[in-house]
Length: 247
Image (cartoon, rainbow, N blue to C red; front, top):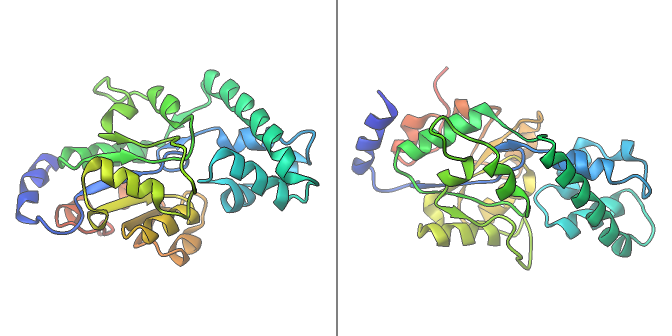
């Protein structure tokens, strides 16, 4: 059955999931955030100590200054709170250089999944603490000619919120702007803190284990964990459920 055929079936299943909320970095885009954080460490600590595991554990999903402070504290840098302001500025400068050089790409499976969910007629939102997420998504264009950002009905990226993930505030704000109850939303996340935020907000959590971290996402409470969004059964979404495609 085609995706358009599935959309027509949705009216028979009004309960369950009806909207999607997407994190950006690591879910939709292979962005240069981690690289920028690592390269900006020069002068503060050995950049080689800033591993992907450290990025995921201490930085991913957090507002810029919070992530900078957490990284410096994890690396044992003296006076981390004061130094974090300078480190965050260096990181932002390096990130903008990387963005302008074209160091941003989209995950093909994510583009296919977003378009499939959109074809069901479901409203979708993007929710990232990154203030650069919108700019990066504008650089990605779909076959229709629209930018990736234009696919989403709500964009709450880069909002100044009191708390970052695992606090659910950013996802609750996205649901409110979509005018969909949290219980009817699923959140797509690649980080433990993001999964925890989704669950804390009363939403279903779809974990994308792009870094061989499926066990961590499950431990955080993800309802379904996949290594590619191609593994998600669109037919199950019609019924308002998250499920894996049959193998």
